Length: 132
Image 1: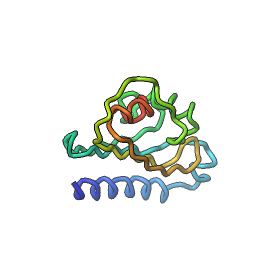
Image 2 (image 1 turned 60 degrees about the horizontal axis):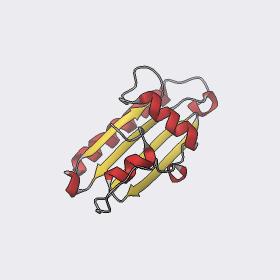
Image 3 (image 1 turned 30 degrees about the horizontal axis):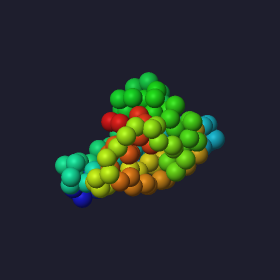
Image 4 (image 1 turned 120 degrees about the horizontal axis):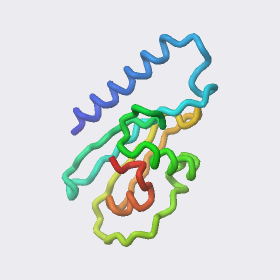
């Protein structure tokens, strides 16, 4: 598992390293661009899976539910703590899911990590954002 995380982090760093070296224009923050890496680490109860994707809110990004994920972020101001549950009924079993979001949202830097008690609660709060 740690090998996958290291490989993913190396890929992300190299992506931004190439982006940063060829730019003569002002940084992304002044242009208001979006480029977020989203990750979800599931507990052993849910198979211990590690999932990741990139969300840019533009055509061709890797997120399978791009439009809904971007709408969810816009309504919450890209703050995981302010996302409200959608009212679905979830069980009380404890199988923690740690989600992370880092990069840029509309030009502003974002770096958040949050742990939900199980995948149902995570999806109830984050909607399409971590549904990949």
